[in-house]
Image (cartoon, rainbow over all chains, first blue to last red; front, side, top):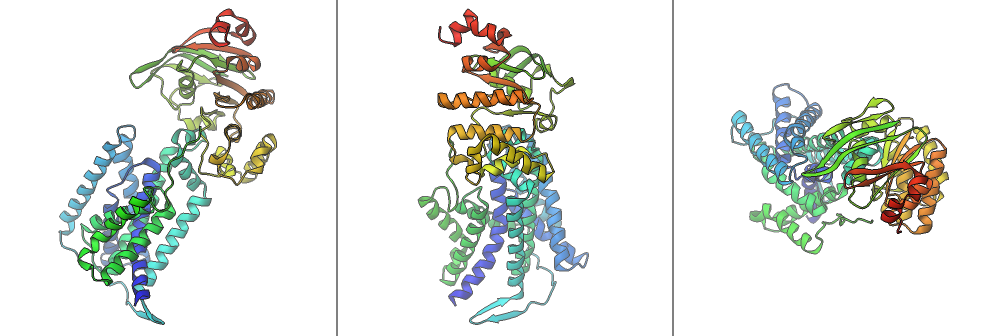
Length: 290
Length: 234
């Protein structure tokens, strides 16, 4: 029973982790909590639905299309809502982000209405037994897709040139430019990656809970934000760990009878962790040697 | 090679550079000396495109570079070793060096360049997998210089390479600067350690509160009574 709940928790946590990665990467590079990130996730889910219902596409194509659409959206948002404010106070882009978040929710409500809509039927689900645990086909898909995306992200950040440039820019813009790095391009790329992961998360969550709504980004976004901070904001492995941690804790909490407080679990955990580790689980204190 | 003409630079509301002109010819070491806050770093950062000048003109190898992006200047052969080293502390040494050659797509060439840097600074080779932040000040300065060399600059700007280093290390660093120059890199050196800087430079400029107050051959400056009184301790 416990192992079953842990598996469910990991599945949920994997989707939180996908969203949390976008928060942490964007924060790592421009020190902005992108409060519109949850809405990117929501739009991703709707694009997925749109591809399946209107264009009659399968899951793979719909997922890819949602990711691509959100790449364009994320890059555009950065270009027009954040970049002009790069040299102003830190509060300005934050307000811009909140504004965008409200705008996107309202826009989607106008288009689709405020009610949640069911995720279209895209494949037959099936249940497999693994000893005492049951795992559904949807869960397998979520775990496989999330693992592949995170492994891909790890590879890019660690070994690919643009990934190295991202790490460099997150330490020091001016010095990165002195290396020949186009910092603006690196920031765009960071938004592209973060948004595509959120879109994937949106489609997978829609599939898992069979529901998509214009407001789905609010709670999921906040929880993923908690996951990112809990893991150590700016740390990519931290966001993955934080997402899984919150997913498992939430599922166990529900199984333990705290289902009324389901959405409070993430925030409670965050407070507890920050009391003991103010930089988050894998966050590093800022250190400078002169 | 580099020609700066009457640049005026503001730092927010502060009028930091009040009309500076200077010139660096191919093969030279030119030094800018002056007290803290005189505007030396601002001059270098303006040349590199990190700060925009309000007015004035900067030309590099005959072409106007005022307003050209920093990364574009690196491509054209101009880069800077910034003040305080500014190494990427959370990345290992070899990655810092790789980043220095960011614009070079030829992996073999980059690997060969890294070997050259290791030959010049053997200490870096011993520690190539260590995080750069764990290096000592002198090693960080070597790394910062090695990293800048990775882009094979024709003109290298150096900002306070001696800052915070022991006298022995300062000597090492300066002999490396001299060596680099002899191997063909033109150098514009900003220093508070006026004596050291003038001892290796061909020419120098003395900067005071955003203006150049003295200019000339390094030797003459070293012997001039004004420089002696203000910067060399009598």
